[in-house]
Length: 389
Image 1 (cartoon, helix red, strand yellow):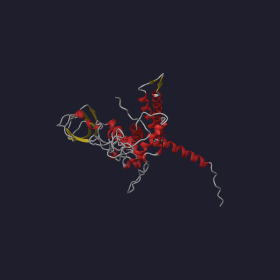
Image 2: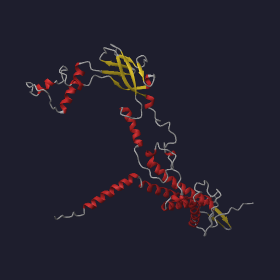
Image 3: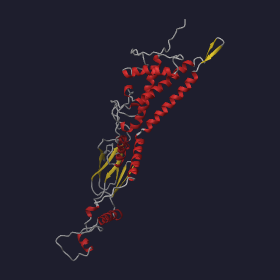
């Protein structure tokens, strides 16, 4: 015996038994209950009721309405995540960001800049360690893998695991020999007086004001002299061998700075932190409550519900393309309903995405800039007042 399944009879009742909607996402929202009933009646009339029967039940309309609210919430939240993800990365996932204003920040840009700062030795997020090398007289080449010659702050490790960033091996600053008359390129006080024609004077205090570029040129001359005419302080670092120049004449300690390659190449700088936003999947945007959605959003939801109901009705009617009757047959419009519903859904999604994109932070700033330019242009056309004293 065939079972008679009831169809839409013009009434809808919210039973509040947990079975009204498939997922129950908004069942705690009283405004959603009332809107579900009203939207079901509106959709049924838009589909032809009571002129034609609607092979749906109230729970069918409720399911479509729940999906429409979720789709609207998903589209808006998806856009908000895309707009704010750079500022949200690294923040806690414990709070719901839906319907909250996000203030842009430079946190992620600074994180990226830290990598450059670490390479330049001006900050960053990679630890710089120091190491000492025991320099021996008359020995120029040192093996950085020899634990008897080098002591690493981070503990002894394979030399391939570290990268030397700086070697503290250089001569005394040229400025300390600026007034040394024996350096050959410096400028002793007597030489300065002679240079300005004051050699025959013997004041108690000698003071000459020199331009800054004169100091720089003389310091540069001292450095060039050390490099070209002398065996200047320098070094070569090839693989795990450090060669220093000139040949040391006494024993002392040489210091270097280095980083651990594993620290620098570690992509999980915040790997120990949990419950933080890392990508689209865990940005803390939850489904919107229907009562918190404005009227334009609710109208979009109603239209999308109608498109879903039309698609569902089309699927039902497409089960049989035609029904035979005495002397003829009746063709059903299932395929037409499905094609119309697909087009309506696509148009609604496209329209919503375009509206969201038009309200992006970049577009709003561009529009504000245009308004400011137009306002300035308008104000410039206002005649200036004539002041009569």
